[in-house]
Length: 438
Ligand SMILES: *[C@@H]1O[C@H](CO)[C@@H](O)[C@H](O)[C@H]1NC(C)=O
Ligand SMILES: *[C@@H]1O[C@H](CO)[C@@H](O)[C@H](O)[C@H]1NC(C)=O
Ligand SMILES: *[C@@H]1O[C@H](CO)[C@@H](O)[C@H](O)[C@H]1NC(C)=O
Ligand SMILES: [Zn+2]
Image (cartoon, rainbow, N blue to C red):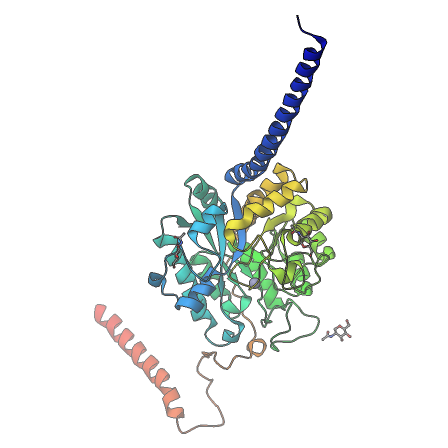
């Protein structure tokens, strides 16, 4: 038999214990849920690892090591934010590596420098087992199953082709699968968002006749047209002209931060119609319009762009190594999970994030390849830019020998007769050899 008192004390003890258990349980639950948030991100990113649109590691290899790859351990590179160890930690499964040569090389040795940057990326991606150079959407998909980090090569700045479609084609042969039409300088055929360089300024013609031929040839080859860095008018003209979806590989929203490198809503709507992709740039100046930013600022761009054109048009193009100043909590490529966690907290669904992380890019790349396959009947374009438009004194121009009857016979004009003499000699030799055979 229990006395009333002992019943009371037993029941109060029971409640005390229960409350104690509850406290322990709830703090345990917090701990578990804290972990599960991170686990959820890791699980999501393991299933849908990131394809990142833009990284300038090759530029840093040039600046810091003059492209001497033997001096660098790609698993642990100091003074940069990108190496294999951190790419793996950040679930970055594919990286578009930018081939960037300074605008000052335009009309000088831009093509040589471009070749050298392609070389260093190709070396990087073939000499290290964890990297794999890929040139098609299928290879990109396969590289994930092989647990490799896929490298895609992308030229940053149309000045790299020196206004030559044959040069563009040869870069494709070397593995280049995308190109921004400009960097911070105008080319003779497309306009930049930046007015930093006073070159090739023109009116009302932000994508010239030749510029349109470049876009067409990229469509024909299956090279992705990248509009980051171009003037809005150029981007708008290219969007109208391209038969395939295009990308902004590393640009953010102008509505959220009014920087000229960002994309205004009206242009985003054109991009949606084109089924293209904007891969959000996370550099401080482009996300917060100041030299300080955090993950909230970056997430605001994702929220806004989703509101305007939907998650199916969004990707990520970090721009690491191409700029100084990255948001608190997103200081290097290993930190991408923090961004995905923030978007999950903002009620982005796992399907939307799978699209953003990789499915949108794969869709665009596949569509670019499909357009290429539809254009196989088209011959390589022989369109040439007019010399007056290039204004490049370094160009060697080969012309046929001038026609006879030139009024000014220079002292060296005797040399011009040499080919004719050689031709006559060749004909005589040919005729005599024919006669001999008879
Ligand atoms: C990377 O190299 C530095 C020395 O350059 C060293 O201090 C650091 O521990 C290395 N990090 C890793 C992850 O190996
Ligand atoms: C450019 O457009 C403006 C009006 O937008 C016009 O006044 C000007 O003549 C045009 N220039 C050229 C070269 O077509
Ligand atoms: C980011 O900075 C803004 C102020 O600029 C602040 O309101 C916000 O709480 C910060 N977010 C994070 C995640 O620190
Ligand atoms: Zn850039």
